[in-house]
Image (cartoon, rainbow, N blue to C red):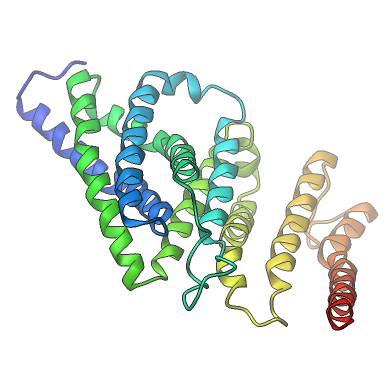
Amino acid sequence: MELELFSAAFFSALLAIVLIDLVLAGDNALIIGLVARNLPKDTQRSVIFWGTFGAIAIRALMAILVVYILDVPGFMLAGGIALVWIARKLLTPEENSAENHLVKGPATSFVGAIRTIVIADAVMGVDNVLAIGGAAHGSILLIVLGLAISVPIIVWGSQLVIKLVDRFPSVVLLGGAVLAWTGYSMVVREPLLGPWFEGHPATKLVAAVLIFSISLAPWYAARLSDQMKPLTVILPGVLVWMLAFEVAASVWKLQVDYLLATQTGEYILEAGRWLGWLPLVAGYLWVRERLELRRQHAAGG
């Protein structure tokens, strides 16, 4: 129902929208700041301006289309995967940088920076639009005010993020974690997967660890010793293995708990679940070692 203009309910809804913007628009500011951080100072201002313009334009469009967008099968899943990809891109170290190469992402062109920002805003803007739309109670004026209030928050927030990253480079990890969490929340809310996750609550934790492992892998891989680097592949691989067996158990209607298993096939499935990944990991480590030795031999020759 439309709220009466300048009534107590109107201002109450407006306050709620301001609080929502402070929380959710901060995500957009964080992403814009992280994407723009390695560009020249004059280019940073342009990226912040056009990135903010793109964020607001996308939100305005989504405010109109969000009901239809959410009905598209697989939209939430695709959005979650896109955020994982963006997180990895932000956290990928720059190969030829100097002292701070472990925390700086790859040099990005103006067009590339805007493209990354627009994709992230398009995906992350869903929650913002839904939250503001709910708080506005159907008031077009409040929705417009909510979008307008987002502008200074994103602009000032982006500039603050750039300054923080210059002083505290590990802030980049926070951006990756925000994207990973948002990606996870979208995946588990995907209508095509929601009933399955509800029926297998334990897999939500596995999915969360998997998504965070893949999203943050470039960051922690840059800090691991050569002996530990295989973990960036092994950990996500084992988690995918576990999820695959959960899916198989659901499809074949088998029990994957030893204490509840009653059929030979169920015992075999559970044994494969917990032990089958060991030879795969051993094979991966062997191949990796052979390739490294070949690379060293070629470099020495």
